[in-house]
Length: 281
Image 1 (cartoon, rainbow, N blue to C red):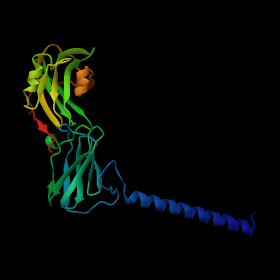
Image 2 (cartoon, helix red, strand yellow; image 1 turned 180 degrees about the horizontal axis):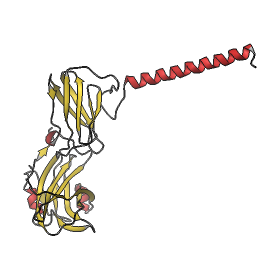
Image 3 (cartoon, rainbow, N blue to C red; image 1 turned 60 degrees about the vertical axis):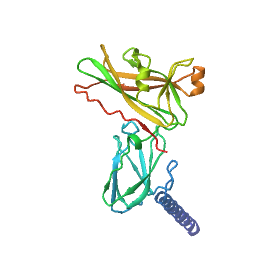
Image 4 (cartoon, rainbow, N blue to C red; image 1 turned 135 degrees about the horizontal axis):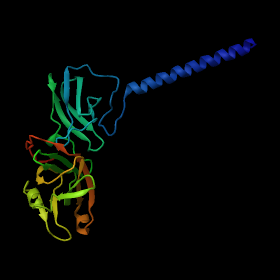
């Protein structure tokens, strides 16, 4: 049985523990409710303090090629929101006026753009010229389709996110199941001249050690590759791109970037628009 002094000591200890727990919880709530710095956002992001303004912002986050970017993080007016798996988002309670829209996605460069919010539903385009760019150097787009006639055709695109030209030496289409090379989109069927003809800014060099397509800095471009006839298995197809900066090209040392897409049957092929573009200064 505890003495009066022991009971008093035990009671004091309990009070101290309760006080420390309450202080810890209060500090935790203050920290969480205050502000959260995300990545390299220009300002603090307020998590639990939503605005109650009259404006609404909605849209779909896409790359410069127009492909949706899932789960991108959107920051505006100190608010944080995450797009869904289709790249779509909806943010309510925003104030009207001119604000900076920031977007973060793992495989893309930080996006920052001034937009004006009006007292209506605001839907700024985030694709093509105003879409997300590659983080440091090179982004490849690739989509492949099968016509019911047995031909395969598709879309390829390149985006150079640097200020330096990139030399594209090879773009090889590879099919399942054994990784068979179907066609080199540059070396076969006069592909170099086909791609160079898409823009006056593109050029072909035939100087040793390798023939290459010169892709300028801060430029993107998509194009259809010509139909290919044959027997094609279902499954994943790959585009293997060999590229280098000038020094690597002169040494014949190329990096390899591979992107895959599932062969889809398209009974009513409609030519998608090819949209060239450069990053605005």
